[in-house]
Each structure stands twice: as C-alpha cells, then as structure tokens.
Image 1 (spheres, rainbow, N blue to C red):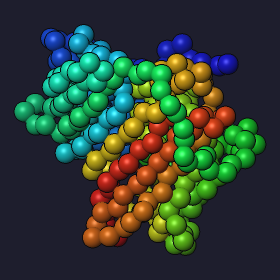
Image 2: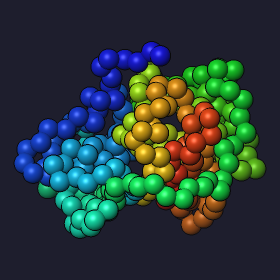
Image 3: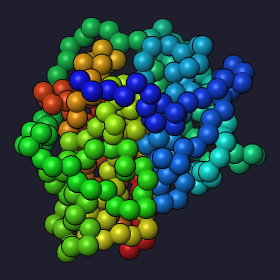
Length: 271
C-alpha cells in the first residue's frame, strides 16, 4: 500500500477554529475548476466543519450542499450549527461566506449507527478490474482533475469531441492522486468527481454547473477504512434533461461490491 504522508487533499480541507462552530479556511489552487473550486472539495470542506465541531454526534448519514454563488479564490468562513440533536440523529445547518456574501449553504444529518437488518437492492455496474485499465489523461486547464486517477470503462473524457451519445452513463475506477487512504471526507469529494452529464450526452463541452448536491453515506467509517488507498468503482447517469436543468444519480462501490454512497445532483446547463 502506497500512501502519501502529507496530502494536498488535507491541505485543501484544512480549517482553523475561530470560535465554537466558526471556522476559517482557504481555497486551494490545486482543486480549482473552471469557475471557483471543484464542488467536491467544497462539499468535503463543509463536512469537515461539522466533523471538527465539539458538539458533533456520530457519523455523517447525509449531506446536501447548495452552491448559491461562485466561490472566489482566497479565504472563507464556515459556520456550522447543530439545529436539533436527538437520541441517535443530529441535524445541521452550515454556511460558507466570503466577506458579507453567502456563497454556499448545506444541511447534514449525522447519527449513531447500530446493528440492524441490512440489504442492498442494487448491484455494481459491470467492469473489468481497475489494474487492467489504463488511466486516462486529464484535460488541460482543469486543475482539480489532476488530483484523481481515473480509469474509465464507459463515458470517459475521450467521448468529448465525439458524436452525441445514446445515454449519459459514465463508469470509472477512481482514487486520489497521489493515493490517499479513503475516509468520509475524501468519499464526499469523490461523489462529485463526474463531469456534467450533459457533456457526455452531447459529446462536447458546454457551460454547466452543479446547483445542488446530495450524498447519502451507506457505509460506516470502519467499512470505508477497509478500502485503504485502493480505487473505488463509481458510476453516474442523468435521468432527465430539459429547460436548462438536468439531474444526476451516482453510485460509489468498493472493489468487492460494497455500496459506499449514493448521490443526486441538480445541474444547470446551456445547450
């Protein structure tokens, strides 16, 4: 197992507490997107604020992030507030601001997991083993993609610049680059690793961006820890495009077929 001792991901989600529930951070140029930072790193940073909060209960069960305005390069402030704590669940509101401007909001549910009936009613997408697939080069000018090793089996970046596809499915093996032990924060970022579905469907770059992202964590911390720095299998597709908006549904699996998380997005586009 090869894992970096000091990783750029940890720098990007680093927060300093300035009061109970108030944190400051700094955008990372390594995770820059075409406009502002990579949405996945923003989501992970908001989750980090709750994780570091002294009143946190349990583990993340769900996270919804609403990208209200572009995030400028530079410092930001996050305020994380527990709005309700029950016996086994805890509800949170989180805001990110720069100056007086709120650019991102989030809600989250944390909870104490317990033994119960368990079943997974979906199955992983068919795929060759990760080691049999070559990593795909990332496009120039999109810095955040350099932080991930991507091995596509469907809907890869090579599809851009080609003809219109019959559907928007992308499936790939993915992990941090350089390798990093998977945890709940990096799993959060990986849930947003897919390019907008409209680009895959049309086979070309178009203006697009995430409006809202929801992640549901199905695996506990112990299960996620077992993944180590091995790649996970991720797949996403849209269910509908129209009137300038599209959805995206995603699944993230371990190599042995354990469901780690699912995600849903609302994305705007111009095409």
